[in-house]
Length: 601
Image 1 (cartoon, one colour):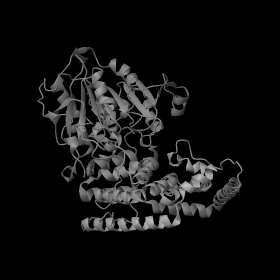
Image 2 (cartoon, rainbow, N blue to C red):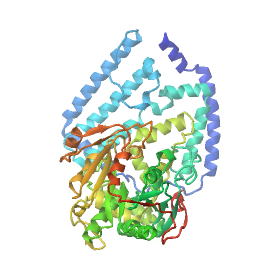
Image 3 (cartoon, rainbow, N blue to C red):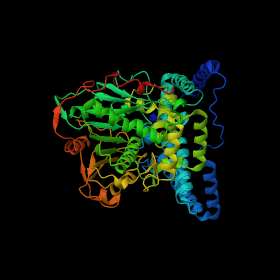
Image 4 (cartoon, rainbow, N blue to C red):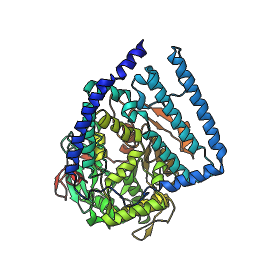
């Protein structure tokens, strides 16, 4: 009886549905007409390259491998049809009132099928399981294929997963029970609103679809995010240096310098007050400085990796000495900022420069041999295409990098918003982290080409003497200062198994900590009552990451206090708190400064 009621709630009266959809179509046509009137000529999203991601070549090699080894495909097809017959049988039994178990279930944590209709309604349960079986068949067919080199295998598997994600029944109105119910309840208003949201996103992307992930009007940098009090005390072409106002009467003698990635803005470490690592570090008695990178335009096209080192960490060290009188600092590098910090430390070791006394690395790659799914986007053909774009513009647009990162978690960062914004016709929820994620930055052509080729494509940073900075061959093995290496267990950008290799590279006293969750949420996990993720530590440093995890101790709560205990022993004695502007550097403006407010749109 409950299933019959559920079915009646889900399916509309045909006549009513026809009238309702006619009204939606008429209103939608007017929306599209108005949109086209406002589109300017020349706003073309074409890339000028028929296959900029070099997908075709990978699938061509896959087809060749299948033709030379048809047995694998036949076996996969046989399993698929057996499973499908089992699904038909259980569905038929269920329609006659028998209790049956599922042939296949969504993975734990798959949020797409949380609506109870997927379980209670026989038709939607069949649609769900049919999709899951088909997706598994596609994924297994390419995963088990022999005769395909590793590079093409990874690309084929990745884009097959993307194809499977795109075909999910939740992404289409007539196979999404939640969207159908919303359409009936609102008499199609959700579809009109969804179309308006779609057109707005295309307009915002200047002809390309730029999916809204959060309400852009809900946040303002310096007003309700990036609000930790401080002052900009130095700036050059590439960065502003912010010194934060102390909240304790005494502070550690040794200042703390943070080098964030230049691919995103620094305020990921200073979101809302309760999530701000910077505010928390200040409260622990650190004199915190952070680099706020410029959002470069074509005038900075020729800025190199060496320029980022000179005008970034080195300029900051000189400025900190003027601001505080201290020549020694502790440093933190996050993601690409950590890669830059590592290269800088290797250069400093070659020059016997000992101003940085300890280094903390957040989710940082230095060995790119196994760079995870990001390596899919780095091959000669794609690099040549990117370099062509960067040569024309002088930079790589931040939105293009953002799309790449979003594809690594397509269900969470693409399709969930397609359903919410376009099928349900809702506005995205205001979320500070997603606002930051959408606030992308550009990358200068020369620097970014060097980074992609030397790190991702050729993995030269980890090889002694393979990279020269300012004419000096660098060797990461010469880094002998203490390091705190934080990785996250579900990191799609810097896989923790790859970041673990730094343990056997640096020659100092190294501490490796593994946090739960991913590249962002695992790092931004402050102490408090509602801690989602724990972390792991190990007093030993075995050769492999699997051995490390197998013998590690799991802790509940935030890893931040663990880091504080470590850094406190390296921060020196306590001195009277230093106010920005007290030293030899004048205050230029209030934090968070003007560089961070430069947007790409």
